[in-house]
Length: 113
Image (cartoon, rainbow, N blue to C red; front, side, top):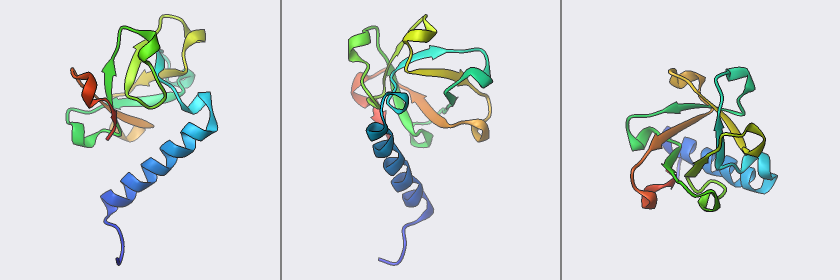
C-alpha cells in the first residue's frame, strides 16, 4: 500500500478526530444543539451541504431529547443555551466551517459519513 488518496486521508483523519472527541468528554460529544446568531459565541461553525457525499455528518432532527446521543447524527434543538452540548452558528461559506452537515429526512441515514 503506497499511500491513501487525499479523500481517504481526510476520511481517516475525521474518524480519528471523532474517536478522540468521543473519548474527550461532553464538550466534544454533542447532539443537543442550540442555534446562536453570533459566530463568536458558537462552539461549532456549521455549513449545510446540498449533497450527502460532501458532509462530515448526516443529521436527522429529532423531536425527542432522549434520542440525542454523541455523534449519532440525531440532533435535538433546545431553546436554552445552558442545556446545549453545542452552540451552533450556520455559515454560508464552506471554508469557515468546523463541521459540514447534510440534513436528511430519514433517521436511519443519520451519523458520520
